[in-house]
Image (cartoon, rainbow, N blue to C red; front, top):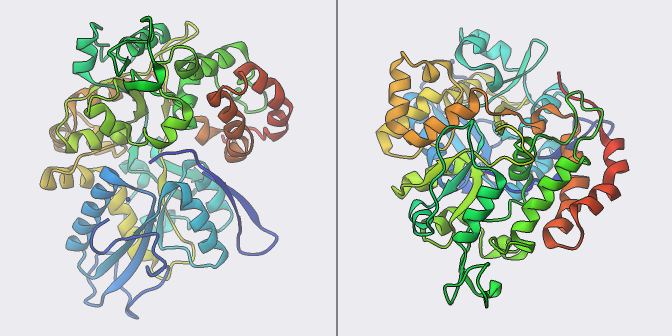
Length: 478
């Protein structure tokens, strides 16, 4: 779900109101379709929240889901329509790189879909600006208390208003090919999220699994980096992967208050340069250019033996589950002598304030955000689960839902991710830092692109952008 997010600017409600924007298909779903019904109904009759009307109501849903995520989304929609036959859902899936640009157009045209998936750092902004609806009144009508149903981090609130609900938490892990690691003579890392590899251990393992066409590695005489047939790892040049590495390196973009920089510190510069050096110095990862082309599907390449390991999101687990591949999973490595840490976040479902069918849209949103439904669909269909629970019943060890989740989910991922979520992590600054999208997309992403390419060092880059970054700090969400 997750490439570098590009910023778009949209005009909302009037020319004076501007919001900075940054941030999968079944036979009925569309890819970047302009024909899906948005915010309107194919029926003039209203349906009650129990789906009891005989008249069909069509609601629209937009998401950036692809691959396993889209497969699960479609299965959930099918289950919802079976339960509520009077409600038809028209999904539209758009490539994540184009997603917010598309929503920008729909907002400006006042034709947002009824329900949409939205990046975590935009949810309260959209709600407070009147673009997204306050879900609290709708849940009150359904006699549902969101605080009783979901964990705190799943609910995006501003005061008493509720503007979004996620159905599963996301974090970052290190995936690895067990056979390649064994062949390289490297002992596999453990599953204790508080005791991960150090960065040096990670680099050494990556070097050991990197081979050129003649079977030579980076430390062998005559090694040809340009003819590698397998790499040990990848360069994590997307912010959703290097940001948690800042945390596991004991630093961050800014301080907790969001009014002073940490990313210009020696610890942050060392962490960022170490990522680039996987390619530039150690030659155990492909270049940034190769990453953007030949290495776009890291899951497939790991399963094919072309890649030893990579740092990726828990949302990618479904790719391995679908192929019944026994992938290794562990906590991300630490650096700078810091304690284990990681990042937790998730995008969420929001509802258009202009939907003509708020009852049906809210009913659909509730169904999709209820992780118990995800578990049941996985058990019924065999579709893999690629995220972590945020519904309280699923996380209750004494519940049937918890037992079902363990049947449907990868046990190693459950063990590792549980440790991450219960202590070895923090909420990402993509949630907590105000003006995050502008800071990231206007300054940090383009600046770091030069570091990944080797055009400038991390130290030089941070010195150049320090004043700009300081000027963009606006505090943190409380």
